[in-house]
Image (tube, rainbow, N blue to C red):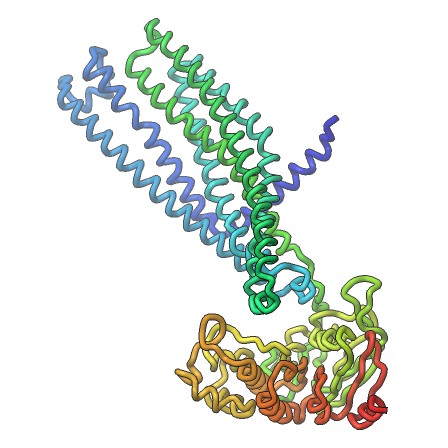
Length: 611
């Protein structure tokens, strides 16, 4: 037994999703109205196309008397003049209809592309605001597929969905009205095709939609495997896993092929059903129409008009059937996009969050220079506290357990411990990439969750173990946190990071393009550019995640010299594993299984470890 309530609920959800997708085109409402006017004019011109031929057959070639309005076109029943006029009128109709249709299509495409741009902007902004936890749980290739290819579904819904539906309905209604005027019985036969067509859409639509979702997910997985293979190419070759990776990829492409073939198979069955409906309707209309011509109930000209409309009638019916398939397939893409747009932020800013102000001129946070806004701002000096902090990525699986320590302004703290003890996780709690499960992280005695997120992150410089460069020049990479920095400031930061000398040796110096597909730099050079970026940001809090772990001795010495200068006067947390790193800090914290097992000066900690 059918659950009509559940079916009704599903239809309501799909309609809400469709209306939400079309809301991205709301700003173009005036242009959409213009499209409607052009569309109506184009359809009107198209419907007038058969009439000059009908008039020629009945009143020029044939002997049917001319109506009074036609005599004004050719006074004195001059058939040659009438023929010339009707021929010119035919040319004008075809040209005008073509121009109107081109203008309408161009404007529709423009509106569709503008809507596509809005969707992509919204997806990008969502990906920017979503927390590190969301990105860690998601596959990069899948997110890229959704942001690039699935967003086309919105443009498709507008152009091949809404506009095609509007075109088909207007054409169908107007043609059926004229056909009804010409001949009731033939018009009824044509109208009878509509419910048969709607039945076909109903039967096949859900199956096509479900298989479209499965095919898109399979294709997304293929893209993810390609992205993973490229990023781990060196690792794969070093462990000679090419054959195994190829077998995994071949299996996934086979799955993708099967899913896509299933989708197209149902589409072909759908079009076969539509073809059968058209064939039955055509045969019935031809048989009945020919009988009425032989009985003298229609003139030859009227028959020609009806036959012409009959040929045009199937075009909007075909469009209507295509709209059903389009909406079903595109609906799957919009659903995948909305999953990103509707993803919850794990890290949210509380209402009336407190501004964070710093005396450092180069902090660049949005609250600087504002006179005592409400609520009361926090003056940042660099005093950091962890109070009984516990955290876990999954419920009942804590990574950090009751971590408590404090770091005074300008003090440096090295965090050491075995792999998986929670060192990097601890760092990520300071800029609120994650929020604590219990306890609190405090700056100047204030819970970081009470501060403006942008102010908090603007006050922190982060240097990762794997240096990150963005496509652009050397200067643009150094000035990533401060795009308005002068060349002198950029050069000074590079000097401080021991990067200036190797930058000058690059083909275009500071204007040399680096990043993906540009100048190749060694790991040590890239890390020194990341340090230069941190020098230029000049933030009062510094987070370093094993910045020298992958460097050779020469680059480690250069980076350590830079780090010593960078850490001076800044509150610093540094995840480290080399003795050379922890020798230069004020205190050392030892983590094990997410707990603090030791905290003291480097000498005290090393003595206990050696003892």
